[in-house]
Image (cartoon, rainbow, N blue to C red; front, side):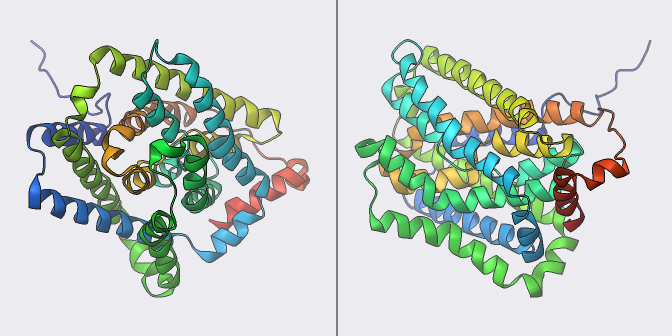
Length: 346
């Protein structure tokens, strides 16, 4: 008889399992009272530290060189803050068949948050895409989202988000932008350390998000968020989000081709333009939605897990694509030169 061996590569990313496990722990052992205050404070500090690391990783030279590839970044920003919100508004027609009003508001909020940084870079690297462009695109999207997302929430969600106040903007800036700028400022002293310990700090990244997920779902459990969502509505939300993700993956890939981008740039556009950031969205929701944040971020958390699983498969397949050789004639073309500048900057 042949021995049974544990598969070397599980079909599900271990991090997805950790995310689902964190939700399960929050459901069984939610933080309450003083514990909830500690979890909330720890998650706030974790997100601030996460954005500090983002700032410390992005070199000023990479950012300046990335600006030269402005067409790619404009494309990613347009996908993130124009196409996604338009699709979110269009999903209003699915109420009440697939979604109810609270879930629709959460889905619309999901379409308004910025793109990811870490996973966009990781998947672009696996698929052999333009990694420096992905670094800059994700960073620019996160920075723009600190201002753009609250404005879009105020314009499209209005009173359901508790209104946009100067205090909420200050809180978002202090929690996200200030740590990022502090990381940029201290990069000259800690940049080498961050580069040498990239894997360890990557665990800190993921651990920070797990802590935020636990705090958010704990609050939701205490408030009875799951009693407000029926299994049928949850299934409808998953279907809608699957369609939304498929549409954005197709638009970013074939749309980038139509705009004349090469393979490496198309990969960066697809992975940076089709994602939504849990790390940026959760703290923004807690500030903008207050006590209703737990239900508002449910679509974002589900979409985040879905995008990780789907993009992991796509990145693995893209890594096996044959890459055509770049001729001297191609290098002389303006688009190739621009892309090559961004690649050499990494």
